[in-house]
Length: 115
Image (tube, rainbow, N blue to C red; front, side, top):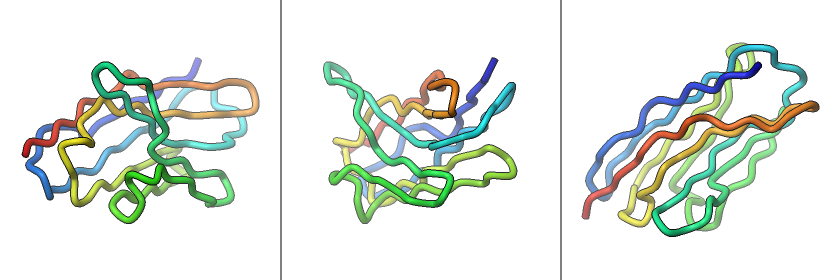
């Protein structure tokens, strides 16, 4: 069993910053990627940013230049530094872990950006 525990969400004014964290634990086999997705009300879940074991990153166009993903492989933890937040970034943010044997999701953390 794999558990993902997210933290760091909250309410922030437009232009502000937040840092999300996600720690993975349990029976973790080889990790391929860790990353973040988000889902706004009435919309489908979408990719925000991912990072492979080799350090390659992939960002949604809407967050490039504002968000930065990083990982601490020794702690099986992934971070998302979010700067210059906009109201349209408001969503539930989900941590994602992909290994050779499974695809896992966190419970989600709410990020609300007020204008």
